[in-house]
Each structure stands twice: as structure tokens, then as C-alpha cells.
Length: 198
Ligand code: HPA
Image (cartoon, rainbow, N blue to C red):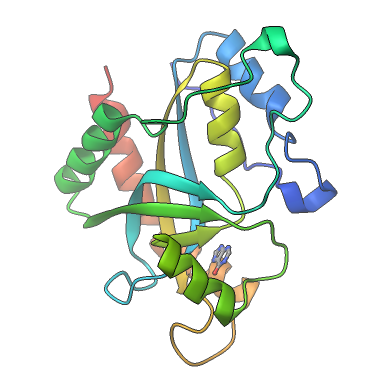
């Protein structure tokens, strides 16, 4: 059985990093074991152009906020984040992409708060820090899921090159257009992953 969330709420919507807390605790509560996440992201790598997919192997929380702010001492707030993106499930995701005939990159995702896009200087800094993709989601959900005892595996779709990587401006329209054009690739990977999931 698979429970599906139709989209997500973002930190930038109301300034609350724990916006997804109830949804994720509910998934854990009804018996889910794994949170499979998807997102749209900006690529920091020239060899990962718009339309590419990337399995997230680790993340950088660049926002300074955390969805576990305010959690009490008895509630396991010091969550271990080593292998937060489950290595075995990530390998399974890569194998699923292979089976689906979709090239799948691997890399580090950096969380910026949004909703404004990053500046070129911020993206240069993110590259120095070791990021491969940038986005405005996923990291708080991963932290909440690990706190709730769920395994996490995550797939990013590159909808654009991050700010300053190539000439030109960024816009939400491009995110939507590339997401639509690449939806069938993402669907095939997810289907192959779920068919193999044990
Ligand atoms: N930056 C942040 N979030 C994003 C981007 C980006 O370039 N593309 C899609 N989501």
C-alpha cells in the first residue's frame, strides 16, 4: 500500500519550518515505513542540465531554521542525520531509474528558504559548500521523517540551471514547464522503484 500526498507546504509560505509535521507524523502513524520525496530543483552542475533527475545522497540546511525547533527534551530532538537519505533505498532508486531507461545523477541538495530565487553569489557559495542542486523544500520533511522514524529516499528534477550558472533570468514558469515536460521520466522512475520496493 502507498499513501500519496498531493504536493507539500513550504517554509516560505508562512515562515513555519514545521509546516509538514502533522502530515509526516500521520504517515508514520498509519504505518508508513519510508518517505519517498520528489521536488523541483535548480542544478549547480553544467553536466546536469534542466530535465535531469538526481537522487539526493545528502543535504545542506542553509536556512538556519529547523522543523524540530521547540520539540521537548524527552522527544528525541537530537536526531542523527548520518545516512538520512537511506543508502540502500537510494541504490534501489538508481537501479529503478536504470531499469526505466532514465539517467539518474546523485548529489547533495541545499535548502534555501525562498520564495525569492538565490542570487548568483549565493549559488557560487553553495557550490563551494558542496551542493549539486538547490531548492526550497525537502530538507525539513527529511528531518521530520527521520524524527518520526521513517526512512527517506528522494528524487530531484532539475528544472533550471541555478542562478548565474548560465546567462539569463530565473522564473517559476520555467520550473512548471520543465516539470511538465519531464513528468513521464519521473513517473517511470517512481513506478519502477515502487514495483521493486520490498
Ligand atoms: N532555486 C530554488 N528552488 C528551485 C529552483 C532554483 O533554482 N528551481 C526549482 N526550484
